[in-house]
Image 1 (tube, rainbow, N blue to C red):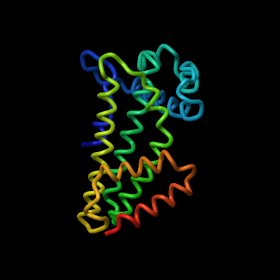
Image 2: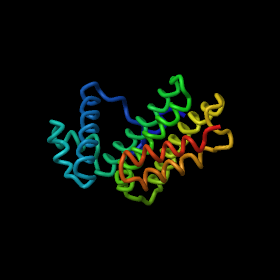
Image 3: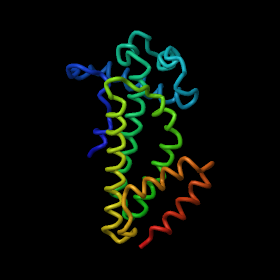
Amino acid sequence: MSSADAGPAPHQGPPQRPRRADAQRNYERLLATAREVFSERGVDAPLDDIARRAGIGNATMYRHFPTRRELIIAVYADEVAALCAHGEALLNNESPADALFGWLRAFIAHVAAKRELALAIPNDQGGQRSALFDRWHKAMHTTASTLLTHAQSRGAVDTDLDVFDLLALANGIAVASSDTDQVERCLGLLRRGIAP
């Protein structure tokens, strides 16, 4: 699974045509600005503030993102895609254990910082939220599994470890750790614990 599989399809109905270059730039600017504003002020920040900071009119923003829900979905999907792409890039690392733990560090930061964003996506009658969460979890699971299998094939980590346990441990570190020093200590303990 590629990082592209982590993206959503928030609009129902017929497939959309490719965007013009200027529309694509506006879309990307809105997405980047929304990511910043949500990070600074939370997901309830006024959408008008996002458009104003992006230097884009409200009408243009609402053409791209008709609802707050769609904007949150797009921002979170972009975060998941970036996390998975980071994992793919780390496969080129000379040390498979360093690649695995580099990605786990990024995963832990993602869970700690983006949990509120994901939970802000409202439920819906059609089950789209569940389908999106399944897609995002599968993308992250696939990335972790690829890095773990690579590290195991090189004898860098214990072959008895499975990806479900690894992600459960990493998720626990993300939820329970109070600062980056504690994250690093816990990752060090985990790394020693799964050494072959």
